Image (cartoon, rainbow, N blue to C red; front, side):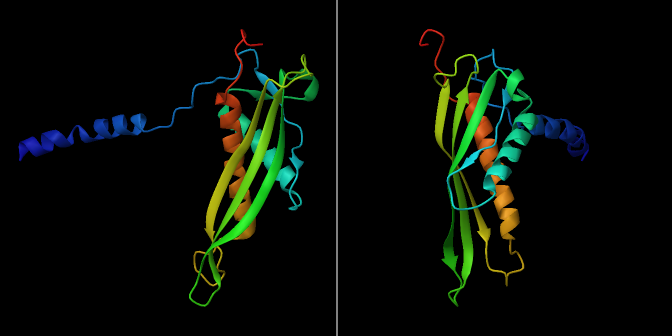
Length: 179
């Protein structure tokens, strides 16, 4: 009996170790170290969905700020400019209920991002295309777990913004020798 109680003393310490071991670690930064401040102008929207350029721009800025490795500043002060274009936005039905009413739908968005240095405007330092995000959701309004399309769109573009930040911070950049 005492051995069992003795083992219980180590449960909090073991839990703490497991918790720390399972925290996410940002991927290694590959963005040139000289870039510490960026400018994120309004994204372009090549889709037929109005207003998503504003959502993705705001969420991308929020994601860069949350990441904490770069500061977001005005155009004239930035070391680099991150320009984005939403190239696709679709909502498709994934499954139907027995009465042919859409039950599960999937919202998807794709973006292209270009990183420019103001000192060298003739060519971008990197281009990332096909940055993708996808969110399945319950589309049947009769369901108790129905998800509002507006909230799904916000979640989709937050995910896409997070993917954009990851790609900008950890994507492939030419080395100084290649330039």
